[in-house]
Structures are given as structure tokens and as C-alpha cells.
Length: 74
Image (tube, rainbow, N blue to C red; front, side, top):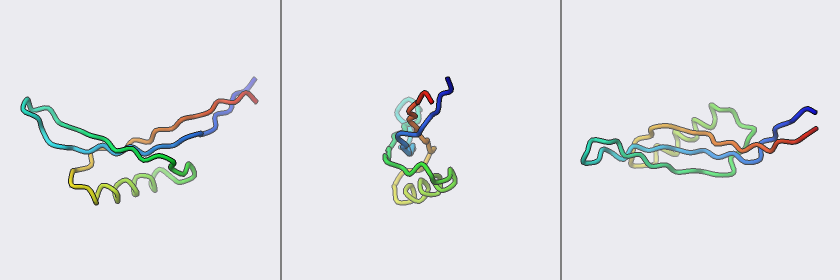
């Protein structure tokens, strides 16, 4: 039987650089935004992340898209 994957939840996670600790390790922190529309393109997701990051005091290190799928037996 074929299985179909339906996106059930989409999140956008922004990773920020908070500097360096005493030992020289980079400190990163993240902020996650839920309920992202799954019909928008990856470019739009990235552009929104960059726009949000421009309002923050710390530098943007990376953008992650976290996707949960519901697998259905069709």
C-alpha cells in the first residue's frame, strides 16, 4: 500500500550568534516561530527570517525549517 506524507506542522527556527565564551566556544541561541504557512516557497521563508533577524541585536547564524509530516496509508 502506498503511503502519503501530509505536512501537519511547519516551524521556522532562527539561530543567532551571541558571541564567544571564556573558552573560545561560539554561543548560539535559537528562536522558533510556529504555524508557518506550508504553501510559501523556501525563498519567502528565508526572506522573512532575514527581515526578523534585522530587528534583533545579534547576528543571524542560520535558518532551519522544521517540518512534521503525518503519514497516511492510501
